[in-house]
Amino acid sequence: IALNNVKSIHVGFLTAITSAVAALCSLIFGLLGKEIGVSNGSILLIGCTASFLVAFVFLVRPKLEKWTTGLLVVVYCLQGIGRATFESTLKSEFAILFSNEKEGAFGNISFQFGIVSMIGFLLTTGVHCSSLTSPYCVEYENGTRHNMLAFEIIIMIMAALGALGHWRGRALYKQEMGRSGTGFERLGGDAEMV
Image (cartoon, rainbow, N blue to C red; front, side, top):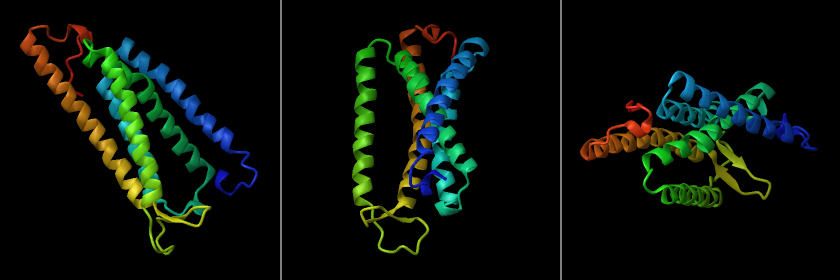
């Protein structure tokens, strides 16, 4: 597997899988929305589920030396699905929900992404474990030991909160549109809460 490959010849291939799956899923999600009428919320739920499953796979199979190439490919595919929903569907949803303040909405996405990246970086330097006996305690190349269980749980919680946050945002949008009397015309008739 790529993890045991000293020359890292598989890393480029695996990284390309994420990009290829993201590009393919963006096309598929676009078609599902336009041709079949699948809501952005449903597509975002697929992305949240994919992100949840990435962490869940590591939770149930913490010993990386027992992983197969197939399982690693599944993880990279799940990352591609999550990336597709972030790069296209989420931004589309922000444009709809914040149609009067698109610049602020997209600035907010960049700000939130930066904050989350910073928190992730800080966690990698701060969440340590004292023993290598736990399968979730991973030793980095610099000799420090990190608690991967904490990362996995945080990712799964954030994926669930992302789905709930979208549902709540959509509910607030529907409530606001009801007050202003404009309804859901801007959503193309998509009054679904998912």
